[in-house]
Length: 299
Picture 1 (spheres, rainbow, N blue to C red):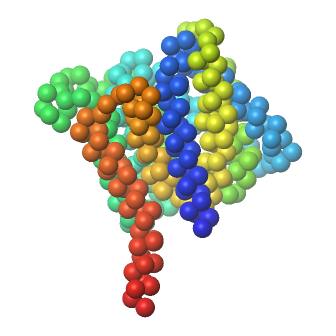
Picture 2: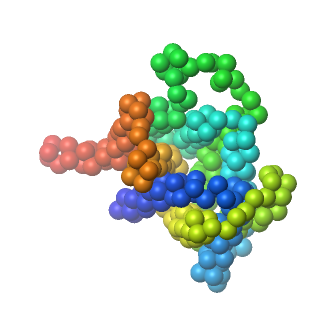
């Protein structure tokens, strides 16, 4: 029951991240990405600090610093990498974080995914690739010279590794140090590091508009304070591999939101990718229920 509620909570977090993508994309016309991250995480840190200020645990400092550092480096490498690579290549390379989670868990903490979790990850990863591959690659019309690895591609790949490690770290420490403390510290670390590096990583750009204000409020409250606290709580009751599988839903939700709000369409390859992501998740989530039904019928 706890795992079911936890994974439902992670799905809701994924929905929040996916639906805020359009809002953030519009706001970035008027504010530089890292400064946006600074304001977003600072607001979230203030909110979480006020809520959990009396329950912070000292033993959460190390894990919180590690999780926050990984999260900040992931966001920064993705942001800086986009300057010298295409959005489609960045999305493709970043999506590799999903299959990297069970690998990272095996290498760092010696935790291996169950067979069907591994199968689900493979199916969902193929779906992510189909949704994010540069146009024309599968049709033979893609110029492979454009897919040469450059600095931006390397940073995007680094982002995938960092996101995978972040999921594994949260899953490992959340139950040990308390999810509240872990959430507060990691969010505050990202806010502090982003604020300290804003002027060095990219040119500062900011024009206050209602769209920017709305994006900061929505992402700060829901996509950061609520989302990362929920993530830390939920990963006490499920595995990092299952969490990564659920997070694979984000591009599907982002596309559905964009389709509803802006009329963006998706080709057959993207639709097939979305179906495979859903199939991978359903395979893992429904298998225990199907197994119980089979046992009941047998008896």
